[in-house]
Length: 176
Length: 295
Image (cartoon, rainbow over all chains, first blue to last red; front, side, top):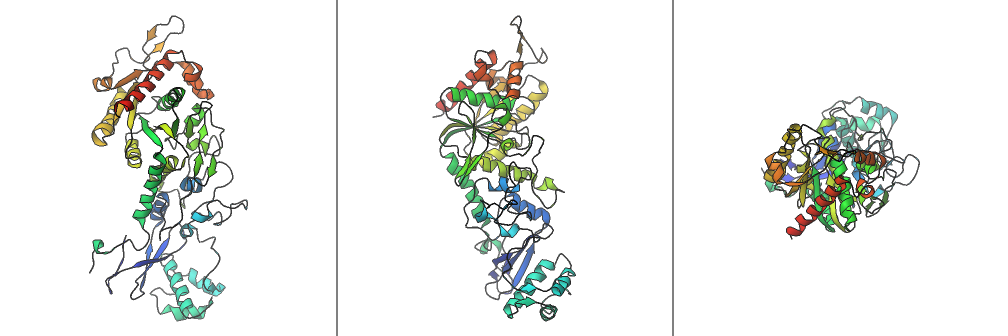
C-alpha cells in the first residue's frame, strides 16, 4: 500500500500505529511537505491477516526470533504462557509469571491491545476527557485520540482536559 | 497526480522487505540440507505419516543425517509415532533444537508445542469468528517457521510429511522453491487413486516438482500362519497405469506396524526382517538412487 498527498503530489510517510481497539489497528501516515495526516483503519480481519503473515506495520529492524509467530500466537501452547506479540494478556516485556520475555526485542507494540497501554509518553488524559473520548463513535475514536494528543503536544499541554478537547475540536469533523 | 508506480516505497513498512527476509531465513537454513522430499498423497488415511517415520528411519539407518517436518499442523502424529512426544524443545537465539529419536532422526512437530493431549491448535485472535479468512495463512506461517527456525544442522535428507489435500504441495513449493522431489502415497482403492492422480498432476504438470515415485501402502497382507499373501482391499483392484509406472514399492499391511506407531517404536528398527521393513528399505534406497541419478 502506498499513500499520496493529493495536494502536494508527495508520497506520504508512515508515522505511527495504534494498539488494536476491538481487534482493529489504525496506522497514521503523514505528508512530509504539508504535514497533513491520514489514518488508515484495518478491520479485525485485516489486522488478523497481518498478524498471520507475521508482518509489522511501519517496518522492523529487529532480527526475527526462532518461531516467534508460533510461540506468540499459539493459544494452546505447552509450558508457561508464551509472550504474545499481539494480545493484551501480557506486557511486552514480562510473561504472566513475571519472567523476562525472550522476545522483548520483537514485540510489536503496534499489535498490543489498548487494554494494557504502554508507559505513557505523551499527554495524560483526565477522567472527564476520557469520558468525552468514549462518546466519540468507535470507528473514528482512534483518529480523534491521536489528533487530540497531537494537538495537545503541539500546543504544550501535558494534560488533556475538556478545555483542551474544546480547543482541538475545530480540527475534527466528529463531535465530542 | 502520481501513480502507484511513481511512488518509491510503501510509506515505510517495507512489506516486501519483510516477506523477503522470511524467505531468506528458509534459504539460509536449507543451505545445509542436501535433499528435501515431500511425502504426500492428497488422500487421508493412506499411511503417509507412518511411511515418513519409517522411511526417515531407514535412511538414518543407512548412515544419512535425516530431519523430518511434521507439516500436518492440525493433526500432528509423528512425535507419537517416532517416540519423542515427551521431548522438550530447546530454544536458542539461532533456532530451536528439534526432538531426536534414539537412532538420531531429527523431528519438528506441532505436537511438541501443544499443551495437552486434547489441546487443538488454536490461534490467538480478537475473535475466532471468520477465522477461515486467516487460519490457513497462520498455518503456512507455522510451517515456514518449522522449516526455517529449526536447527537442522547438516542434513542429507529433510522429509516433509504433508497433510491430506492436493492444495498442500503448492504451499510447500512456495516455501521451498527448489524442493528436491515428491513421494506420493496411495492404497489399492479406486477412491484413493482418484485423489492421488490429482496430486501427481499437481506436482508434475502444474508445479513442475520432480516425482520420485509412488508408494502403494497396505497393498496386501501376509497371513501370519501360512505366509500367503492376500489382498487387503478388493481383489479386483489394480493400480492405475500412471501410478504403476512411478512405483517405488508395495508395502504389505502389518498389524505390528500400527502397534509400533501407537507405542512410539520405530517399526523398521524393531522388525528389520518383516516384509514391510524390507520394502521400506528398498524405497529408501530408490530415493537415494533418485538423487544420485540427478547429480
